[in-house]
Image (cartoon, rainbow, N blue to C red; front, side, top):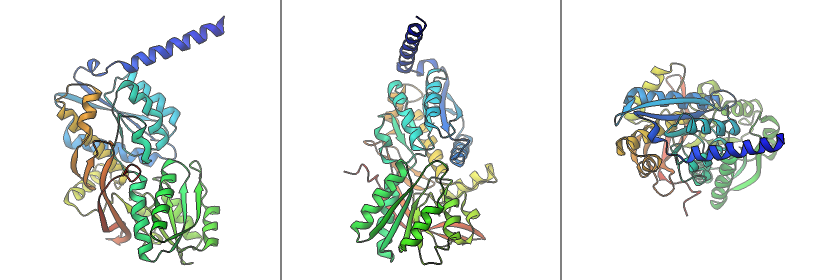
Length: 394
């Protein structure tokens, strides 16, 4: 009898939740516009959370907290990088807080965990960090302001074989973005005549790169191609240098996550000369970026903005402009429509939110780590304009 009561209660809770999720949230908002920012503020990906929150707050400080007559409220929640927690927090924000938009999402599993709730409640979900190609296909309400790994990986797959790299071993973190990086880099590198000797995958949780790097040393490729999530680059670089792989003639080439702007100075001079492909560098020479970096560092003295920061900053812009376009009226459908097709100048360069895929189209840069004014920077030396996500470019 007690078991039947529990099942009935669970069934009623599920029905209540489904009903709550399907109700339009805008009517309950009065004059407030709430953004639920779900980020890993603690745990392995905490640097991602800190960067995005700092950038979101900077955007609000620069652009005011009243838009189209609505008072914008940012509600930050720490999911610790665990997707079960992400899902619970997204549910609470949508049902209890009645947020108009959910945003953030430090890693792919977190973005995917929230996607069904965004769909069911018709709440726009702005992905400011997670970078697996397929994320935007998980819900018609997802809009991305970050990047995708295929976008930046194919650029390196083109550059490397034309610049003396004939053989590589790939080393990636074993989850969605890493698998994307491995696949799209390898395919493009081989198409250009390069040879992939071996493909290595490291666990996402508590990675130890040492045994994998020893395998690379034994394989003696021209270069090691690396992808690891933001925040893990310093550990890879340290162990790469400790094993003397640079002295053994093995170059490191990578996506820009590895030479993360916020960690780069801590990596030391061993990082000098590392070539990466990415969509943002704190050293990007535009006037807009110089202002952005200066304002960010003034507000956050111990931090340098990285690519996660620009994803958060631009994500807030996408939300603000959608709110202006809808004049503060209408629910998730109207906001979503106003997010699609936005074109604007970002600190990273010109960007477009593709109206069909809801993904970002942007320039990708080739960069080399150099020393300027006593500090290490990713200095751009080439650009590929208007790169769409190759994972969707049919």
